[in-house]
Amino acid sequence: MLKKITTVASVVLLSALTACGSGGGGASTGSSGDTITMGFAQVGAESGWRTANTKSVQDEAKAAGIDLKFSDAQQKQENQIKAIRSYIQQKVSVIAFSPVVETGWDTVLLEAKRANIPVILTDRSIDSDDTSLYKTFLGSDFVEEGRKAGDWMVANATGPTNVVELQGTTGAAPAIDRKKGFEEKIASKPDIKVVASQSGDFTRSGGKQVMEAFLKSQPKIDVVYAHNDDMGLGAIEAIKAAGKVPGKDIKIITVDAVKDGMQALANGEINFIVECNPLLGKQLMDLAKKVVAGEDVPARVVTEEGTFTQEQAKAALPTRQY
Ligand code: GYE
Image (tube, rainbow, N blue to C red; front, side, top):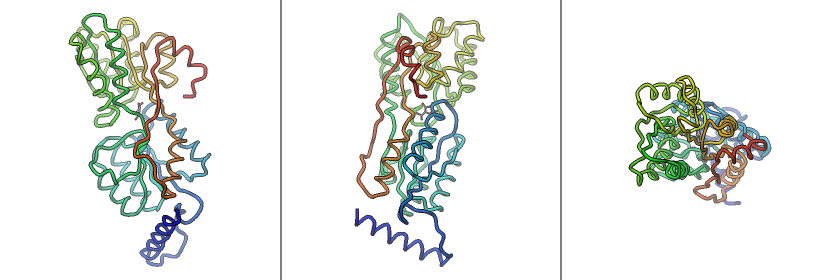
């Protein structure tokens, strides 16, 4: 601890020197004293999950006394990179972000590393060989979520089953991994076929649009596997508009278990939801405090989550937080 403070103090001194005597002021770095400043580069506001996640981060930062600088990248990597660069310039104590896609982060994260600003990945991970670019990754096991969806499919398929898949954002960890886990589980059942698979970008309108196209191009659809509730809810609209009954004529599996999804599940329009917990704020702030204090943190923190059937959704809804 003491050693860390000394290291950080010399960094502050160094940056003060390189600032060419620009006359005091300076950002509140965790190092300069009490307040930890966190720069948080959020993906966007694409889904109910994201809204709940943002609220959790904002509420818990406040509760922890952490000064939060928050940006919304509108699902664009370039915006997230810009936000991270600006946090580096502002000399925040810690940067946390949820990478919109998996690849292409090494350069900007190296800049953060050189500036001695620790980075925490939250919700989504990156695909990089250099694990020294971040301190920890807090979030769900998306492959496992895909497996849970696949298990339900295998257990509930009766005869030949045509599945259409609504993928999340192209290149995003949850889209890649939820696809992978599902495919792994249905591989043993040649009767279950994914006949079409396309990205709906994790949004309701995206899910609706892609489902409309699937309904036109696919002669027989038995099941929709949507990588999140919002796209599943969009698909429900498309299915109804095509004169079919969601949950009966076409079964629906989704991931997230946010309120609107759970309501549709309880109403019988969705058949199964795999839970993905967006309430990461508390754990994130705890990790941030440790990282800024130079304490060791586990390289990976996995969130605990379950699954919901229609009956379980009815029971859980009244006390659901998000
Ligand atoms: O499932 C989806 C959101 O990264 C886990 O992003 C998150 C996913 C979530 O848009 O609804």
